[in-house]
Length: 344
Image 1 (cartoon, helix red, strand yellow):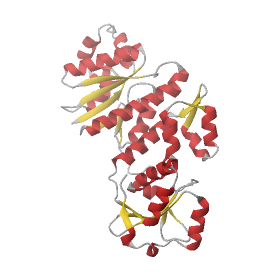
Image 2 (cartoon, one colour; image 1 turned 45 degrees about the vertical axis):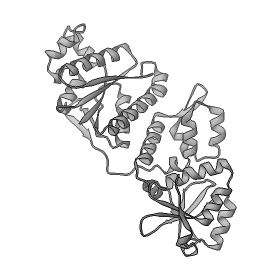
Image 3 (cartoon, rainbow, N blue to C red; image 1 turned 120 degrees about the horizontal axis):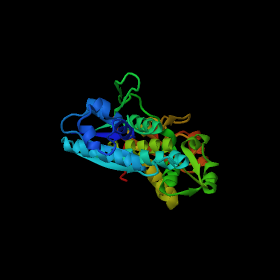
């Protein structure tokens, strides 16, 4: 089964008004060719299969709601399950639209994609209707979540498909500073408080943030990338991970807050994509170091012949890390029988 997520604009209302049917949208839809009725019916006429369900996303405006309700009723009457989702703050007020509305759009899209996939349904995104910015961010979400995106070309009136890309998105920045992203996404944070944290972090992180009315939060792009990162981490089957006795002692001797951070890093180390993107080699060891970036926590590990992760050393103090590398950290120093499997 498939679910088509369709963004909704006001072309239905405008076209019906020109036809003198603005107050009778169901009659207009029944007796007008779908290619002519609206942007949404035009694109859906080329996408719909028997058994498809549709989720119509509409703005927080009377026009958007009315158009979406009419479309949902029409397609229900024609045998396609349909539901409505209003996107909060997606309205004509410029500042709310740019900040809150587009961020809410990303959040709703991600929620629906996850829900439908968990139910075993294939997801398609029809981004023909709505504001231009809606289409742009819907396309970004589709690319990040490997969902095919469709829209109607305005000039040629042909359906255009943007298939899932074969490239792998680089989430290493978010992975390295995941604690910061978790923190800023958990609640509204005052800009002064965020700035105090940001002064210790890479400037690139600011590109994923936006300031609004004294608060700093993830931008719509930042929201999309962060949610895609979480989805990748959650979806990947974890690799078995083993800690050497020295790593266990280091972990257990850390302060509770540091332990919590290290446990989160170990969880993400079990994800193949994060290991690949966010590890590097280092002089003085035949192990790899995770994560990259300017952080206190360092995990020295290797992947054995069975594909299992073997953690030799854990550090949260940079001087201890540098001292260990100066003395040499090599796999041969860590006998296999001194490792024990780690469970989150």
